[in-house]
Length: 77
Image (cartoon, rainbow, N blue to C red; front, side):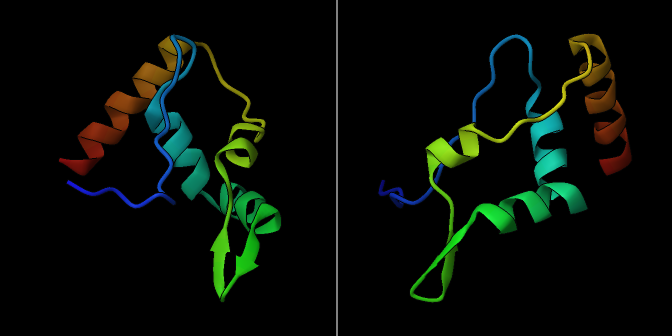
């Protein structure tokens, strides 16, 4: 298997939920944050892992994050 070197894998510790991060990065504010940080190289917008790690995201308590995840899963069904 070959994986492109420009892909970034996100993992969280016990204080974060991946659905929260995904939802934030895909919302209007998250996209604007990424857009303002990215560099255009050969017509392709890029952000590196360190820059992604430096994005500040306000996190509610983990119990609320998990409830949010359940609501998202229910909506996707």
